[in-house]
Amino acid sequence: MTTTDYATPVAYREVTDAGGRLYRIGETDRDIMGRPRWTMVLFPWMGMMGISSSEYAFTSAEETLSEAHLWSSGHIFWLMGVWVFFQAAVAFPAGQLRESGRLPARYAMMLGALGTVLGYLSLAFAPHVIAAYIGFGMFSGIGAGLVYATCVNMVGKWYPERKGGKTGLVNGGFAYGSVPFVFLFTQVLDLHNYQVLFVCVGFGLCALVAGAGWFFKDPPKGWWPAHVDPLKVSDDPRIRRALAVNPPAVKQYTPREAARTPLLWMMWFCLLCTAGINIFGIAFQVPFGKDMGFAGGIVATAMSLKAIVNGTGRGVIGWISDRYGRRNTLIIVCLVLGTAQFGVLVSGTMGSMPFFLFCSMVSGFGGGAIFPLFAAMTADYFGENNNASNYGIVYSSKLISGLVGSGVGAVVVAAWGYEGAFVIAGCVGLMSAVLAVFLKSPGRPRG
Image (tube, rainbow, N blue to C red):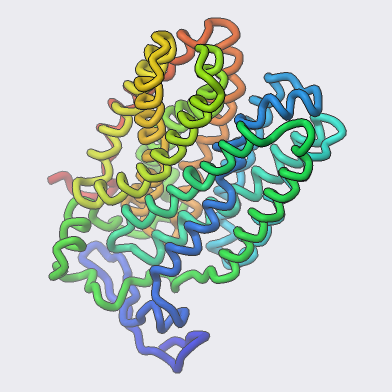
C-alpha cells in the first residue's frame, strides 16, 4: 500500500518479468498527482520553450553584442561554446541529485529559472566579457542544463510504454521556442534598446520556466501505467507495436553498471559527433548566410525555419521511432544530417535562396532529431529508474561537442573557410550513421 498527496491509500503490486525486472502497477496517474499524465508532457514542454533562446537565438544577437560591448566575433562563439559546456556538464550530477531525492524536480526548475534571467542580465550589463562568460556561459548554461535534464527525463518516467513521441515533443520545445527571438534579435535588437529587451526577455522566460516547474512531480520508482500490463501483450496496437520494436530494458541499470557496457560509450561518441554538427550549424548558419550575400531577413527566416523544423522534427522522429525502432531511425537521421551539411554549403555558394532555405530545414530536422532518440534509447537500453543519470552520462558528450561545434568550428572556418568546415561536418555525420548500426540493447539475446 502507498499514500498519495491527493487520495486515500491506493493498492499497488510489484511484479517481475522473466528477466527479473520489477514493475509497480495498479496506480493511475490521477492517484499519484491528482491530474492526468499528459500534463507532465505540457509543463516540461513549456519549460524547454523557456530555455531554448539561449542556444538557438544567441548568435542572432552577435552584431549588437559586438558593437555594444566591443566583443569580437570569436568571443561570441566561445560564449556559446561555454554555455553548451555547462549545460551539458550539469546533466549527470543533476540526474544523481534528482534520483537520490536531494533535488526535487520543482527545485531544479526554480534554479533553472534563476540561471535564465542571470544570463540575460549579464548580456545586458556585463562590464567585461569575463562577466558574460560567468553570467551567461556558466550560470545560464547550468540553469538550462537543470531544466533540460529534468524535463526530458520526466516524460520517460510517465510514459514508459510509449516514450518516443512524448519525449520528442517535449524535446522539440528546446528548438522552436527560440523562433520569435531569432527575429527579435535579428530585426529589432539594436544599440538603443538591447538592455531593455534583454531584461524583459530574461524575466519573462524566468517566469515561464518557474511557472511550469511548479507543477512537476515524479512517479514512484518502477511505476507502470495501470491500464498496461507489462507481462502481457497489449490490446492497444500502438503500445504493442512500440514495445515490439523498442522492448523495455532487461533490467534497471545503475550508472555504474551502464558505464561498464561498451554500448553506453558508443552512444556517447555518436551523440558527440551529431551534436557537434548541430551546434556548428546553429553557430555558423547566420554568419555564413550573410557572407554568401543573403539579406538579413532571409538569414533570419532560414534560421527560424531551421529552429521550427528542428523542434518539430524531434516530435515527429519520436513518433516514427515508436513505430519502426529507435536504432533504425537514428541511422536514417545521421545520414540526413550529414548530407544536409553538403547541401547548405552548395546552396550558399550558388546563392540559391530556395535551396538554402530547404537545406537549412533539412539540417535542422536532423540536428534536432538526435536528442529525443538518444534520450529514449537510453531508457530503452538501461531502464527508466536511473535514466536521468544514465542519459546524463550520454548527454555529457555535449561538453565536448559544444566547444568543438562552436569554438573549434570558428578556428576551422578561419583556417580553411566555410567549405572545409561544412565538408568535415558532413563527413562526420555520415560516419555517425555507420556507428549507429552497432547500437544494440545490452543483455538481450540476439534474435
